[in-house]
Length: 469
Ligand SMILES: *Cc1c(COP(=O)(O)O)cnc(C)c1O
Image (cartoon, rainbow, N blue to C red; front, side, top):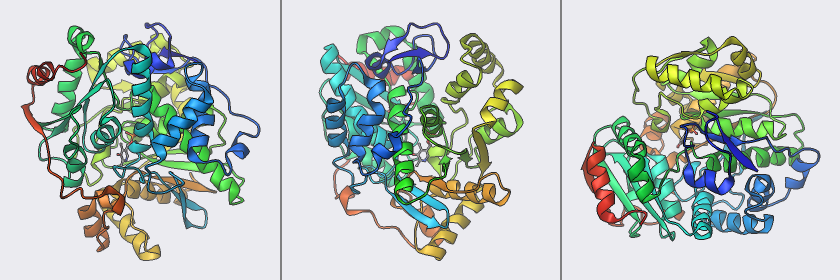
């Protein structure tokens, strides 16, 4: 399989090149040249298969001819061997026709582990095959950083620099990053906000000389490999429902920030997964809800919420959906993104919006609704959910109430409640304990550099560490 850029001015590349480059050289995002189809009895073949086996079957058209099915399965078995639940992504029934898909059983208690654990192994293998090194630079508002550190610590050929806003992430989130003592991991606490961190990373990525010298790469959800891996749990969720006798195509509710996870659901549908509707669930940072309901894509200032991993105004992966909705009109996407960069807003053409609305609905949850949802589920069934998952459940309830959702519905549980213990305790009156598998997180010493919110300062730190050389 080869991969093309949404902006149409970069050559098509293979999986390994798309993985290592992350962003296409024309500024676009990679997508498969054509959607592979898993038709016929594919879902039935997943019934009873391990998650690693399902990953290998689902991903094989994406990684071929680079990796064989057997190699992919072995890597996936290694990636998912450390998950606390042997099912990796188990379903939990919470209502007559409602399920939670628990994606938080990995080492850092958020769904990002599912893709990142395998991504770390794929990177290591790609660098070994290509005979190179890489410097991964990323900004995190909390969960991506920890997942990346856990996935890349000790991996050969990769140096990792993760920027987080000093004092603005939870202690659990920080400790998942700063307690890694491997020499290839460098955490940088930036004197500023998450937006400052992201600006610094973007400025570094724009310095082509520097990037070439250090083989700079990225592992946020603009990296196609992450989304490809995330398609797997949409397929396995449907297979598990089938095994329970649920034959109707389920809808999925996806707590959304950068539009990566929900796009993976769309990709699974294009690949033949019987998916009903995809519900984009957002917190008070509701750009995606406004864009899908009114057709105007216009960011506002970021409002901090109790679901911080969704406190995002510009949803990078939306570009991928626009590309599909436009009938893969790369010139139109270039125009749209250029105009958006200039005016900080864009009107989605009516024809694209119709395409999008055939698959997607959207809903928003306020802070109060999110807290109510945490309390309601705990009272009704004793289950604690984290605030991101609660945004999804609140959206599900609203969309069921007015008939936009019906039949079986799977809401993605994107983080473990213990990752956000204060918010959960204040909403439900019960404090979720840290699961045993995260170990002595609070006893280990922390290691962290500090930097001002300046690209030059961070580049100097990377130079000094000799990243990528
Ligand atoms: C990253 C994250 C999200 C949002 O996922 P996107 O792919 O950015 O839409 C939701 N919940 C949690 C817990 C996250 O860490």
